[in-house]
Structures are given as C-alpha cells and as structure tokens.
Length: 285
Length: 104
Image 1 (cartoon, rainbow over the protein chains, first blue to last red):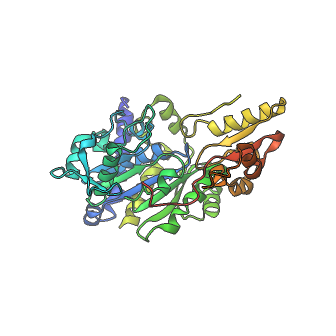
Image 2 (cartoon, rainbow over the protein chains, first blue to last red; image 1 turned 180 degrees about the vertical axis):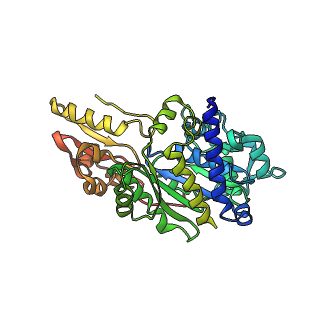
Image 3 (tube, helix red, strand yellow; image 1 turned 90 degrees about the horizontal axis):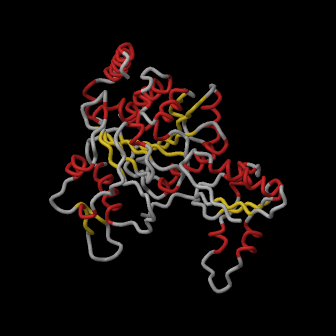
C-alpha cells in the first residue's frame, strides 16, 4: 500500500469483484448469509484464504462478516490485519441451562449474541469482525466457561443473518468434534501432496455423518498445474470447488506478517479467492 | 534420549522428526518414532508409504480399557507399530478415526 498506482489497482480490483456480484442480483445477494468453515492439514493455507475471503466478501455485502478463529494459535488475525489477543471471553457471559453436569450452556439472560459481537469481536479492515477463541499461552487442561462462551456465541450466530467464516486449527480434531457445525459449507483446503491429500481424505468423512444440511468440498491450494486439482478430487473423493494457484505473494505476506490483500491486490491468489467468494455465494443461494 | 518436536502447522515438524529419527537410527541408535498428531502423517515422511500409514492402529486403541492386564509399552509398540526404513519403529499415539459430534 502507499504507492498511488497500487491504490488505483486495488480500486479496480474491488470494482471488478463487486461487478461480479451485481450479476447475481442484488436482492438475492443481500439476503443470503454465507457460512463457511475452512479445514485442512496444518500449513495448507487455511488462514490466508479465510482472511482474504472475509475481506473480499465484506466488500460486496452490507451484512456484517464475522471471522471466527477457533485456533488457539494466532493465524487468522494476521491474515485479516486485526490485532491478535490473548484474552479469552469473559466466563460470566454464559450460564448452564440446567443443574446437572451434562447440561448445555447459553448466553446469560439479557445478553444477546449481537451484543457479544459488538463488544468482543474487534473490527478490522473492510469492516470484518474477528471473534477469537482466546490464544492459549500456557497449560489449559479444562474446557471452562470462557471456552463454552465461544462455542455458544458461534452456535447462536448461525441463527442470524451475519456472514460467518471460520478458520479451524489444522488437522481433524476440531472438525471431527463438531466445531464447524455452524457452517453450511466445509471447505477442505489441500495441496496436491500426499500428506495434505491424506488429511483431506480423512476430513471427507465429515460428509458421511452430517444430516444433509452441510456440504463438504475441497479447495486445491498452491497448485502448479491443472493436474493438482484433478488429483485432489480423485484422491479425496470430494468435489473440488476451486483452485488457488501457487503465488509468491502469499509467502511474502506471511514473512512480513501482513495480510495478503495489503501486499499485492491483484495477485493470482487474491483473484482466485475472489472467484471462490463468488462460487460459494452461488452455492449458498 | 527423548525428543519432542513441536510448532505451528506447516512449520515442518513432521519432516524434521522423520529426518531426526532416521539419522539417529543410521548412527546405531534404537529409535521409536511416535506420531502424536491425531491427524497422523509421520509415516509418509519416514517412507512407510501411504496405505501402511493409514492402516496403523493407535497405541491408545491398543491399550484399550483393560487396566489389570495392561501390556507394557514395549509390547504395545511391538504389536501396534510398524517398521520404517533404517530400522526406525513407528507408532501412533492416538488417532481420531471418525467424526464424533457427541464430543464437546
């Protein structure tokens, strides 16, 4: 940023992305809530894609975009350009529904889920709100009320018309334990490498257990040729919904610790994420 | 010597662990490589191959609920591990096989 011609490029890029959505029809577009969770092996590129996705989506809609980071290590904050926080949510936000140990949790009466977004999800570039699990820097052995508060907020947000974009920690654990339950679409991010595709094939099992309301698709990342997406689809058994080409701008942004959108607005990866925003919006409609 | 390799996703933990394990084994040490990731891929980096890696049962499943007649760790690694190149013995600690929406 800063170079005048870069700013012009950014405006042109934003206008092009916006025009794409105009084609979808404003009325339909404005009424739809996109709820997506990015999952996959560690290092597959979930955070960069999720952060870029949130900001491009926010540029095309009047509805608020809430980025959900349930990873106890910072990642999404960097790719969005929002300061990361160590602070967990206040435990007093939630209460148990009943008295028995197995009872579920709910927001304390008088607190709405919108209040929690206003107060605890700071606003970043393009107006994206970031709800963070709270980064864990020490030993945390129990799931306390503060962690329950995070899950209750995410659950309740799924009943609103806000756009929800989740970035899950690498691997299968959170995804297999229901942390992406808010999403209509689970996007399994994978490279065309054996370990990344093996993780994708394991995550594809999520398609077997859902109740038919959740769609599981794959996204080929860091591709170097057309074979990569095809190989991922064949190996994982998932429909490949998009392809993000290998792009040196991604590595450069990560090394500098800045959002991809702020180093090169017209990079191939950014263009590909813009297409993904369009594709997933269509799928949601 | 007991070494644990930790770090952020994509930082290179698995590759580092595999190279460490095989290098130590080549210099004559007895090495057990423990994959502690619930999404285990260490077998791929060690050179065990894709399907054998996927077929491994975890030690946690090997221990089971049997407490009184619990096997020793050596026995469990023998029974549930697999041989990797350079004489490394690979075992998984715990693998999450399937989605379980009952868990918190």
